[in-house]
Image (cartoon, rainbow, N blue to C red):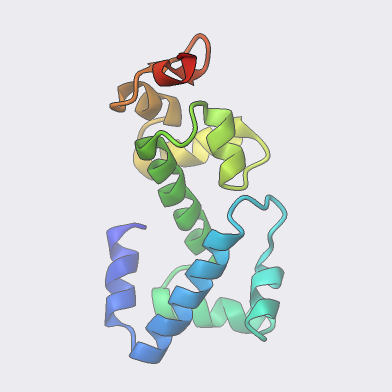
Length: 138
């Protein structure tokens, strides 16, 4: 997650930290669900969508959609770094995006590079033609 969000979380009161960590965990547990909505998350925490929006905005200073997107992008980067998936399409599905081209655009906005560039430059030996790592070929 971006540094400013972590800083905001650190500045929050203990009960707010606990609550926002619970929300973050809820999102991470369901990260591969492309149809997860703010309403689903809010209702799981016994709040209306509007109450949920206000609470996240008050604690973090960003909207719930931005918070979810940041969690998804950080998770995607983690998947790239660990080599858990070998194609952009697999990574996009793993973090709940239905379209890999849209995922790539959002990823580039967040990190400044497209996910394929990270896959190629990562320590994993990625083969862009076959869409797999060399270790998967053995």
